[in-house]
Image 1 (cartoon, one colour):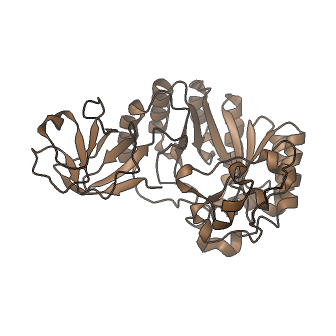
Image 2 (tube, rainbow, N blue to C red):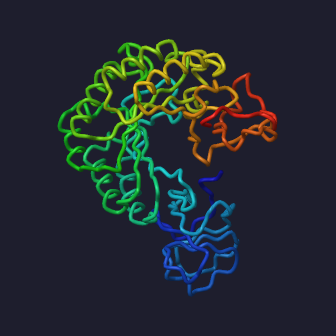
Image 3 (cartoon, helix red, strand yellow):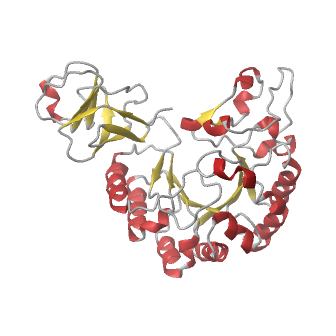
Length: 383
């Protein structure tokens, strides 16, 4: 699925953010048209055209755009000075997120979006502070991601406060390594917001500090993360633990589950996640890859342990045919729609509608156990 397109810019001196429309009578900010551009469209902040005509007034315009087929009424885009049009929010999707920064203070072996050492704070803050008020008030859920979002410091809280005010009914899920919250003032500030619709998703990859620190490539990260979790819990912040499944985490899954239950029983849920073959993962495949078909027993033990003790447990990014049927009820359709695919053999699978499918990057590596379930297959009770 496309999230950006490109054309030839004209009279665009700074990024322009707005909702797109195909209706010339709309009160949206950016109009999409295919051919001749009449003058009465001057009231729009910018115009996007797939046509090649551009003998207009000096109105911000991107013409000869490759395609606009991926855009829908009410989507929010940013029109950049180079003619690139990035989609910031899709009105008809439940998989929208705001990238707060590409910087990070960890450097995980399996990071799907490797950090970039450049200061993007001002640009992304300006981008999101203009985007948030335009998001539909009936938005069900919104993600915040990075990099490490908390590296924005005070601006992190300003954006959160803006979301809280502009989208009071929206469930917000923020991915963070949790390390910044080891500082009491930082966690206290978040707690003082009393943001009941916000949940933090924080990774914890081992019960053994050195193993976690190795995976995230940051000395002291385990202690900071655990301290951050305690500080946040003290302020009643909703918490989720995330565990990515690979060669470094699987050997201690059982011990990690016990550690979570005994030391972090306040977390709202624990999520085990299949590996995404993107970013650093292809370069670290020897250190990471285990066929999901091989770690099924260890995963079952870890998940059932937590579930039996009353901790909400889920499995993301997994295919039913590689997952033991015992834990099928815990599987979720978690892969964002813009990178969710199925392979050819899935077309005849009777369980396709219930399956989470694959990351688009799974063409690089996938389980040897992928298969189609026949029509007569009966799933276990509870699935």
